[in-house]
Image (cartoon, rainbow, N blue to C red; front, side):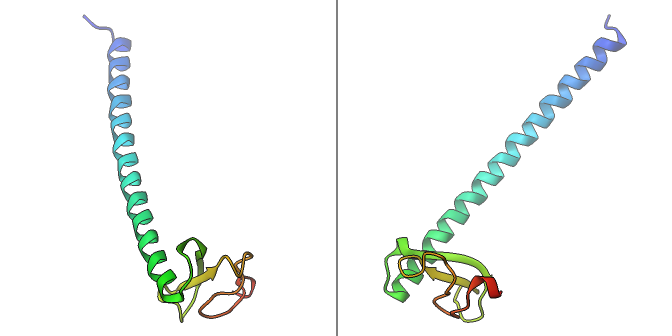
Length: 97
């Protein structure tokens, strides 16, 4: 016969195992999302590099809104603008946005 304390411990262990399972599932979803984001970034970077005629390694995708960029975000040429303050599409410095 189990005591109330033993039953409570067993319930807590079962709950811990359920939470661990949920955490594994959540991490799997995050990993899948990050992989999709990595693939998208690689593809869009390659397209922009081809459009601009610069090496893919020099394309930097920014975070500021840009109405003239195909990504709708500023894009920088790292070889010519290592401070990333002159978008190749709108030519606005990031500190003005």
